[in-house]
Image (cartoon, rainbow, N blue to C red; front, side, top):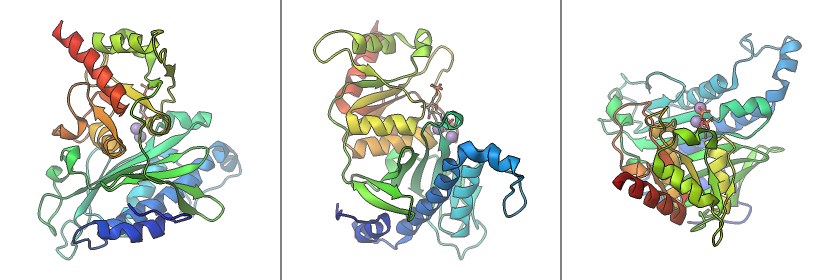
Length: 338
Ligand code: AHG
Ligand code: MN
Ligand code: MN
């Protein structure tokens, strides 16, 4: 992976395009479009606390519409940016009931990629000025180019992903992505609207001392998860670990990748498959985790090997430093045997 000092994301994309055999530049254009949408969403997210003030001033946008909720706005921004550039043949979003087919009846359109997106992850954190994110996942369509996309194009196992990434709108705004050649992070300089390579070749430490889980649900967790949480809290060796849970998957993942840790959203007696969505959240994060020397499973099976059956399917999620995920799996396997 090439990565020069002070390199911008734009320069990086061009320089690394050759990593793709027979690359037509289509994926590069697609990542450029996501970069553009990310900057637009970042601009809106940064103004979140001002929305009522702007509203009070009677401000409306150029089409005369009222201010929208940020997750709807993020959804529209990503979809419109991709549509306008005619760069993908289909989009599926956590915010939409069904997938969107783009120029599906026009044989002239030779686009081969579909994008799946969680436009605003952790949106309940917006009101309290805590980091939120966007997650994206890119696949090559499996049905013939030039025909309308079908559900089959979206229901691919995560192992088929061509690229995946996230944007974290945090104290700094960062875009972190992989095309299967490691993970690189770019920080936005808001003064000039440019992302710079700030975190080349990001990797999860082999192990860590942070566990991230909504412990308020403890009573509803399976026994193996309860046992692992107790293990994290035990005074022994490098334990007890530190508990950190933001409630934005993107932010919790980002911190754990830098510092070393495990993120868990287990199933519970209240939610048979947990909460997180396989296609919009777990698969892209799993691809990033594996590319960053980490691991992602549903407690028993590698996330990226799960064959999806529906667009909005949920799955339990354990992701982070390899040794920590393996330890959690040991506890779950032991409890399952009992
Ligand atoms: P979203 O805002 O896209 O619906 O996702 C929120 C997700 C994830 O980001 C976060 O880790 C988790 O939901 C938090 O859920 P709990 O409040 O149940 O802990
Ligand atoms: Mn989400
Ligand atoms: Mn969301």
